[in-house]
Image 1: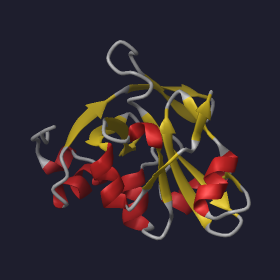
Image 2 (image 1 turned 90 degrees about the vertical axis):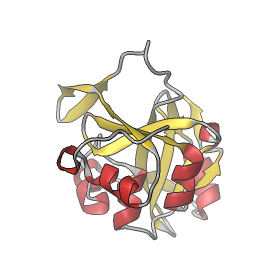
Image 3 (image 1 turned 30 degrees about the horizontal axis):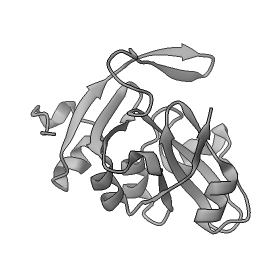
Amino acid sequence: MSKKHQDTEGKTLVEKILDKHNISYESLSFATHQEGDVAQLSVDHHDYSDHEIYKTLVLTGNKTGPVVGVVPLDRHIDYKKLSAVSGNKKVGMVPLKDLIATTGYEHGANTPIGIYERYPKYPIFISDEAKGQAIIVSAGKIGRSVKVDANDLAKFVKAKFADIAEEA
């Protein structure tokens, strides 16, 4: 993958972070629509598979505090599996009202790259399925994403690959 060359003023903070660390990525934009208080991606499924697009979920563990899970768009996070790999007895989703205070990002814009840059002590786990492939994660702004090699991403954010996803 090659970097998409454009002026830095049009880039998100996540793209600037990737540039700074010489991590190759492709910038992508997706249309969004509003459902209640939450923005939703409108993805053309002919262009990307659900196993290529990943969502970043932020949970809180009873021992570790915030824990980040990155799973395919068409899967759910398995609380028991994430609890086990993260060293917690149990985990639960961070309430929507606390999300910005916890990560710095609104619902739909959470990204392992930006979260790691701001909170490097938060443990990050990426679903095993991502190993060895390019995945699409949020670029920290609703409607903007980056396609990045999952191994490069894991190395940069000090994430561990783990079996944390379950069928939707």
